[in-house]
Length: 262
Image (tube, rainbow, N blue to C red; front, side, top):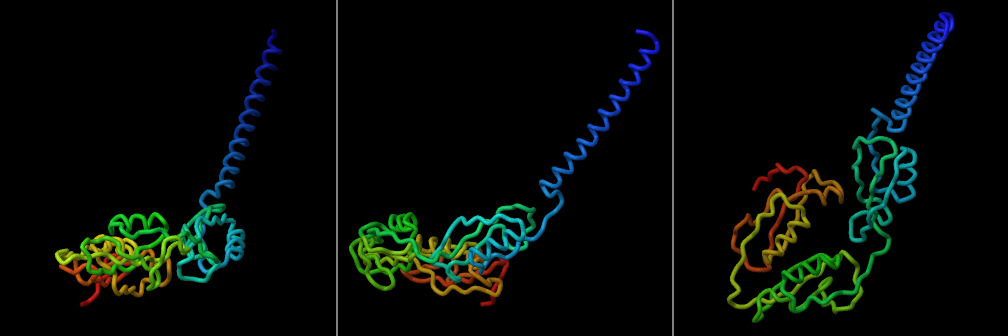
């Protein structure tokens, strides 16, 4: 190869290198631009409030905000209008990016029915576990004289006896009539502070007690707030001797450090 050919080859090689470099830089710019566009890098906005909207309205709002609405549950026994959103996750004003999924719970139009199980002759502990398993809720505990302590003598719904096999809506509260012997003795109040209402009710039942008056403070404004609120005060306080079936009054708040004057 002569000197002239060598020089031409060198020029072509340099030109090719430069062109390849420019193409590579342009390619990287396009890739980063696409990634930024695809992920909406740095762009976030507040989640709107879907609560109280029916499904069609919620889907329309989600589409307008470029969000995806997903119904994950439906509840019949809950405050609010039937067919509307009663809970959402993430909550309103939470910062998200475009195309994020919003998971909502709907208050169903029709209840889901099951056949009433038989809890009679079970112990309170067994009946409590089975009630939760069947999607029911434990209601009031009442005691009647019996040879056997804490054995279910009768199961009731809405102040009347309910027989095994009767159709009943999921989420219904089942009251239990329990046995109490003469030497059964007393129980003591558990510590309910920091528990939700559902947790407090189960804890009280474990101690053979009922929740009495439930008072929500001004921080609790809707159903979702009531679910999240926790006990900030109870009367009687913990470790007070009570008779089985007695009640504990509780005060609920969204502020864990909330206090009440006596």
